[in-house]
Amino acid sequence: MTNSNIRVRFAPSPTGPLHIGGVRTALYNYLFAKKHGGSFILRIEDTDQTRFVPGAEQYIVDAFNWCGLTFDEGVTVGGDYGPYKQSDRKELYKSFTEELLEKGHAYYAFDTPEELGAVRIQYESEKKTFIYNYEERKRLRNSITLGAEETNKLIDEGSPFVIRFRMPEDETVIMNDIIRGKVEVNTSVLDDKILFKSDGMPTYHLANIVDDHLMKISHVIRGEEWLPSLPLHVLLYDAFGWEKPEFAHLPLLLKPDGNGKLSKRDGDRLGFPVFPLQWTDPKTGGISSGFREDGYFPGAFVNMLAMLGWNPGDEREIFSLEELTEAFSLERVGKSGAKFDPVKAAWYNHQYLVKEDDEVLANLLMPIAIENGYFVEIEQLVNAVSMVKDRANFVKDLWGQLDFFFVRPETYDEKAVKKRWKADSYDQMEELKGVISGIPDFTSENTEKVVKQWIEDKGYGMGMIMNAFRLVIVGALKGPHLFDIIELLGEEETLERIDQGLHEIGRKE
Image (tube, rainbow, N blue to C red; front, side, top):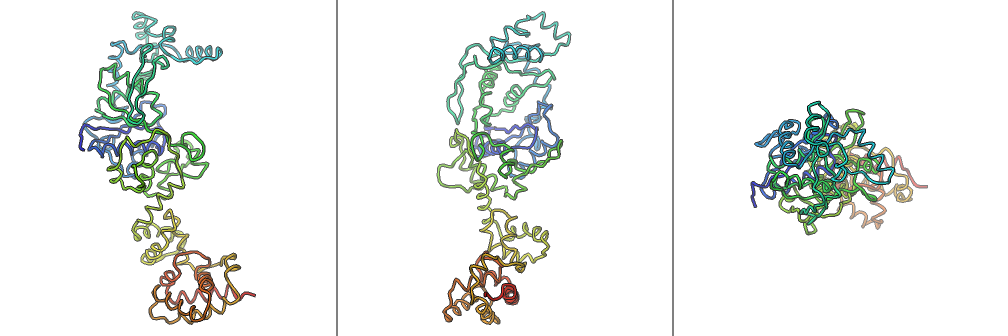
């Protein structure tokens, strides 16, 4: 289905690094748009200038570039509905605020922070909760209680004010959510939210609604934390007389252990990132880890995120971005929160690593080899990677799985020697040298055939010989198929390692 009227947006605030919950929200918007041939838009919501963090906006752009999620319109690519940054749209919000005032859906409030603080203290002393609602506004300093003449006088005098939404009295707001179904809320429990602040900037609520309307957003797909704001947003659409978009509120990403929303503290505590890219706090200099820097492939990261809260309706777990687009539907997004599992996240990366081209992996691993002081031939590294990649979750783990291809053992695993180096092992390894020395075809298949025939002819125990053989070659009982290892090492290196092992381990007393 192609529908150019499908328009969705991701609208982050540049107040710090982008949490993976935000990336998942953007991903679901992207998948929905692409599935239906619509447009995916990036809008920066920077109305709260007090919380602006330098570098945060560029971080958002860099994160999506890494993930491979491209925008059809927005701050990075432009479009017909810009500007796409709310601070650049400041002037247009005033006219919409005035429209609400004229229609009686909003009012001026002159209460100072001190006055409101005093009211809150009074309520707390009576063990009640203060809400600036239709009951309280009748007793506070605003254009409803003061009248037009006094209101205009205060405005002319430059008295500070905010503009609040005039919540209807005792009205049931009926809403529909694609994920959660029918939602009903009575306005008596809702407060008169501020729409326009004293600094001349609109709040999120007003700017969000105005921008979504002007940008012709058809579906608002956002996090569950915005569900309490839905009644206000629906009432604002009604107040303006605008057609409402469809809404879908996504479940939270939850911490791996216990309950509650996944936070940076959980990542710090349990040793995993919660941001797509590494972030350096411009104020403190503190560094927070990122999935990219931890060694995740972008495709694995995106695949993992997609499965946190959505399922395809079958047993599949591995999807390319194109396959996700084809399979995605909001109807298969769950209502309950999804627990982030760092072990499962690493499993996804493993699936992508084993499918990756060996030469690509070898080139990614080469800097790590050089960092460890080894300058190896790329062909050798490619061959070694092909043998061990199924044992690693990340590229950075590969060196520890294959370093013995390029580094002779400096020590020999004490537990393995004690358990597997028998009284006859020394003489058997001396004998093995003669067996493999001079084999014209030193391929894995041929050396295995020759050695196993020798073991059979001698009546030796297969496990006993192979464990001792692996010890002298690798230094431990680890690694891939032993005959694959010695093919890559070559005859000369194999014989020298046997000699070194015999010298270092010696005869068993």
